[in-house]
Image (cartoon, rainbow, N blue to C red; front, side, top):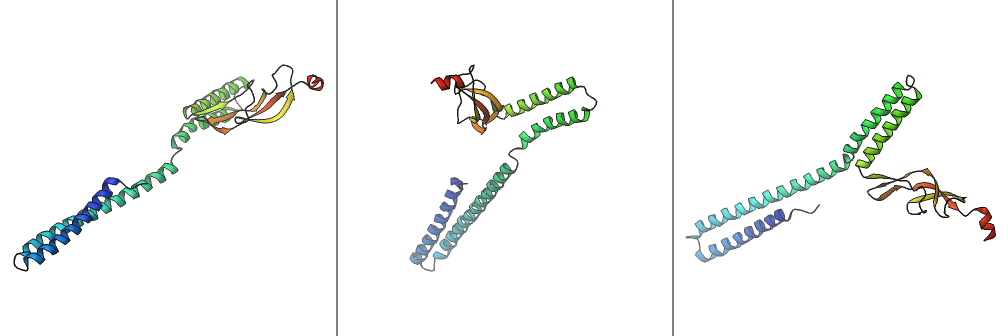
Length: 194
């Protein structure tokens, strides 16, 4: 992290003022000799001490800002997924309830519970910008899809996605996992004629 320019400027100003004060004190003492120079010297020394104190305080504050920034970055890395994880707990609770009721529940209620859990999971993913990549019937795109195999098909256009084995997912437009698909090829009879 870059240091705060205001604090760096204060420290530089304090150093320059202290150097100027010391130089002025030496010049004044040389001009006036020992008679009136004592007062001026003590006045200039007080000013130099004040500037030194400002410099030390500015340096300490800058160091505190650096430490705070490091601590904030560490916490951001450590707890970045906190909200996402908290939202996933609802999905875990739903799955645990399904398992607890599994032996007593009928097939239909178990199916409804599973669908509700999947819908809950989908809403959590959507809330965080995670979108499904389900290319059924679309043209094959090697940047978004992973072709598992080619399958001849008379119904589908060659080069299009015939079947989706596994949906893909994207996070805010960036691919997390490609969709695994079967790509349609020309039917074998037409391929032999061509």
